[in-house]
Amino acid sequence: MYPDPDLQELRALIDRHAGRAPLAVDGLRLTRADRPEAPTASLARPVLAVVAQGSKRLTLGDRVYDYGAGQYLVVSVDLPVAGHYTQAGPEKPFLACGLALEPAKIASLLLDAGTDALPLPRRSAPHGLAVCDAPAELLDATVRLLRLLDRPGDAPVLAPLIEKEILWRLITGEQGALVRQIGLADSQLTHISRAIRWIRDHHTETLRIEDLARLAGMSASPFHRHFRAVTALTPIQYQKRIRLQEARLLLMSSTEDVADVGFAVGYDSASQFSREYRRAFGRPPGQDAVRLRGGAQMV
Figure 1 (cartoon, rainbow, N blue to C red):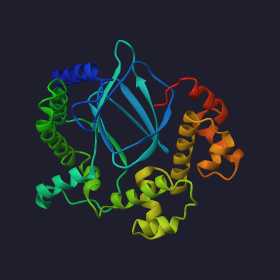
Figure 2: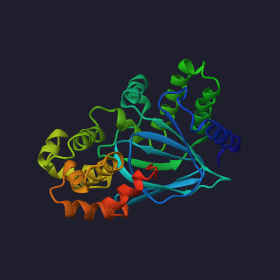
Figure 3: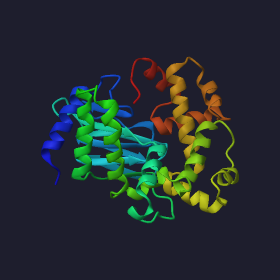
Figure 4: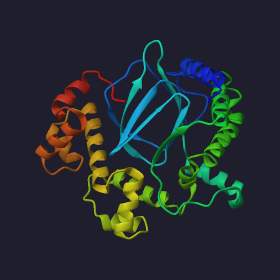
């Protein structure tokens, strides 16, 4: 189904440049993993990820997403996910490239295209994450973008043009409704994104659904429904995931007492913090802190 030469070249380009920094193309990230791993919590940012080899699994709330070679992943808003490589080894590592999705660039492209060239926007908020097969045109453009890593002098001129083509392939492709909403100022996704940013920036504060709904320009019931459709989580669950991820970063980078870390991220009870931390990461916070500070890398 996929042009094998494109995938072969994409593998070679990622393998050659992964781990190098900085890259000649802004917003581009390359991933190479030599072994499977236990699920690790992280915050997924808006991104297009194209897999050249191997496979990965992401979980978001009660949703599970498996994707592999010849497929792409789109994340439209900041989402607390757990992920791990399911096919990766020294002989055949997991290889993927990611391109940050910026609302301003998508909005500009939508303005250039005009409404006649695009399907009607959907009224409901789409899921915040989607996986599907990469069409040949998208793979071809992705390969051409990565070729610029071997010709960095060409990148400032050609990379924006190829990125624009990649965005167009997304906007007019299978997940076009999701990608278009990233750039539409009045889309349901944009309204939910405002609430998501508020939770992230004020995760230590008490959360009131009515205030978040007002921020999103909705009444409480539709807001709750749209928020869960996008994130697979309730606002309270989303806040809890953010608090626990922030706590893990604090435990890794500081020597604060476990209870103090829990209070710092918004918990009123040290025992509740320890209980929920262990449920999320598989270890009590004290034990996990020792492991993290001992040199384990959190992805």
